[in-house]
Length: 182
Ligand SMILES: [Zn+2]
Image (cartoon, rainbow, N blue to C red):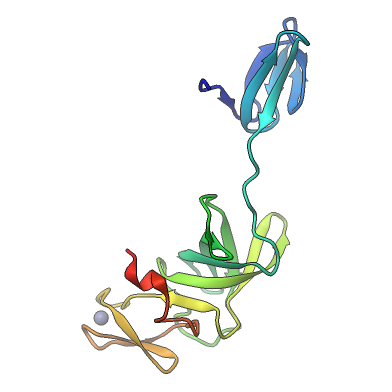
């Protein structure tokens, strides 16, 4: 298939040549796309439409996700979702996790791998929680020297420089297959 993917608002045909079909709208004498997808010009029906791209999988409430911390803010973390219920996803979806009630200084650092549960979708934002025992940080590094850390009760200790730091650790910390990945 040729590269005929359109984005919303992009012109797909002239109104004198085609009628607006699925996922299009008329704008003066031009037919434009309302969604991302491939153009479909039906010359028999004289219909210009856009085939909506396959929907990306949005995790549902209750799904368990594993992702990488993108941003570490005072009261929340933003997580780029990489796995949903153990299945790898390539959808570049982010969820946010409110952490202000968790009494830890460093709940998770940017680039940490965390496990979270989806708790709600509000205004297009996916909200997750890391409160449960099995949720939280699966992989982290030393904040001082980026060395490898080991678990010490509910904190982590750097094998290289000895720095001890807190995290909201998952009970799966140290057991994860992610430890062997880059
Ligand atoms: Zn260190």
